[in-house]
Length: 115
Length: 115
DNA sequence: TTCATATGCCACCTCCAGGTTGCATATAAG
DNA sequence: CTTATATGCAACCTGGAGGTGGCATATGAA
Image 1 (cartoon, rainbow over the protein chains, first blue to last red):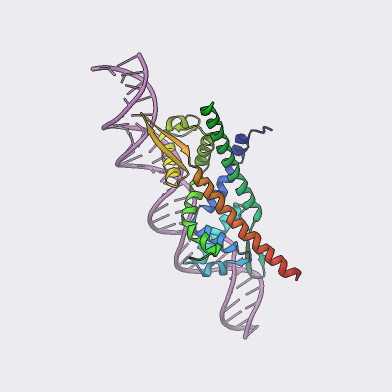
Image 2 (tube, rainbow over the protein chains, first blue to last red):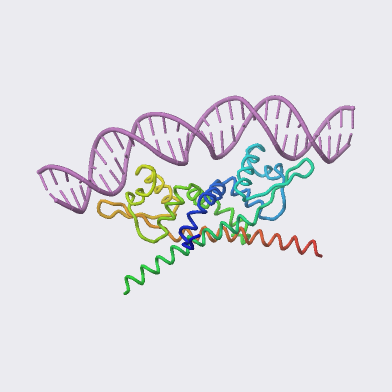
């Protein structure tokens, strides 16, 4: 088990690409936005405000779910969706790791130049 | 100009979806990773370690560039690419805003239940 | 000058993401 | 029981994403 941050990032990168891809569609991003209010919402509710078919929204929700961004639970005849805060945390940590890596290398470069 | 955080998020969301989409491909994510070491690298250099054609890598780099994740500068006969830290900052801020929104709504819910 | 290297541009191919419609089914409401 | 609502599933369509190879061109090296 290496502690090399680049190696760690590279190991995670496939799953991370999936999460990024899930968020890389404006419809899905708007769904995430709608769910970020914290209320669990059914597919029908999430469809109401959007110019798409219920089936389209349903597909998007499945994509978000299989990426771990969202989780669902059947309740009666409706399927209620909510954000999965864990995915947000992982995403944030990934972005921060890349930023830090980048900042570190810039600092190294600066130190070298000023030497 | 509303101060409503959801409205602000929604206004940004199109550009943000583009950035997420740019990072939502494992090849491009690995390019970002390679560039996160901080050295400017040419297309040929970035292609070396990958099982793809130079043209494919070139296309991916253009996508990253038009999303603002990367910037390039022609130098002699080579085109040198580097990470654009601004995009990373914006991404981080977006993820954090969604997280905060989510946390706030959970807190509200908790307060309501415990009332 | 001549040769090798680094890119850009273009045409072309294949496959899947994003949408739609139609039909079946389960559950709530009257 | 009958009707309306909420979803799931499957077939189908279309455009663009991701790759390739070929050829032209600019620049560094011998």
